[in-house]
Length: 405
Image 1: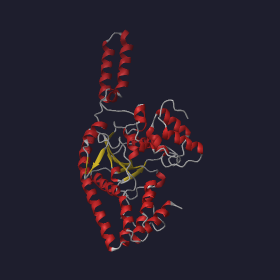
Image 2 (image 1 turned 30 degrees about the horizontal axis):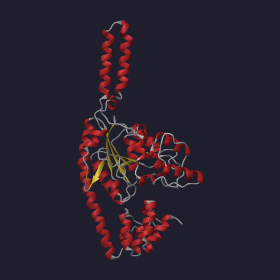
Image 3 (image 1 turned 135 degrees about the vertical axis):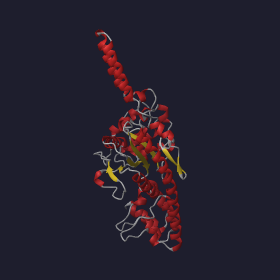
Image 4 (image 1 turned 90 degrees about the horizontal axis):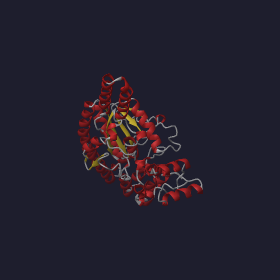
């Protein structure tokens, strides 16, 4: 039986435990709809299941979604249930308005800094897809940036899906890895998306899942080019009741966080990712110096002086990172103790029910890249006992360099 039918049936009879179990397995079931465009919330409302309504709303259900007749779930509610849903919706919109106002202040400041430094601004909105409150806030943010001259929205969707038609901005689908739906890992997709973003810099919003943030900001192969972009990353995922904590993404020095009705200070994040780019000045200075040496030195030293200039110009391109002016550390370079001390609940991500690609497993183990192993395995279905046994080994193992596949 399809999960979306199961959750509709559970909502119809008010089976809260079953609703929670289905959403724990896949929160997206809260947003699937039937042939009449009705989600589980409609069925809970139409059968006066107030506790089921509360549960679904607590898990991010969209009370403003319309069915094929143009009605929302609230239009089918009894007076008492309607009043409850209306109050919930008003409270959500009040919170969103406060956050939007806080965002506008941050954005205006960061946009001015970007222009001063002759860079394009890229506001990265890390989110959980389909959560209604996040959608409301995203729409408010689009209004704000459009009013100030930003017209592009990069979407973590493939072009074939033609998403974003309801956006106020001009949308560009960038998640176009050829094997996106056939096992391509998060980092593989990050590489393709970053290439799309970097090839033609423009002032833009980027809407993406929170699990992509680290790849865009820190990993070398998929990093947004901060020589071209002034990046302003936000973690909106915490507005989702199903948010999975991530120490890196939740760090207010890495990503701006939701803090009640406002956001955490943007300055540490700006300092982390948007240091002034010194490489150009260093390169020009080194070339001028080497040219002077070439003219002023005797013929016997020409080769030495010329080589010095070339090396200075080359290394100056990485001078900022090399001398610690721009903190940088690849996640896959974590030490062995860091990897073996992951919280127990996180290790539970390596459950039976995964369908691994053995090459990917071996590569991840060699790199000790726990993050992408977790992402690659999560939610997949094992087909063979050998694969299940491998996942069990990964689940229980103290990951080490001697690990063999």
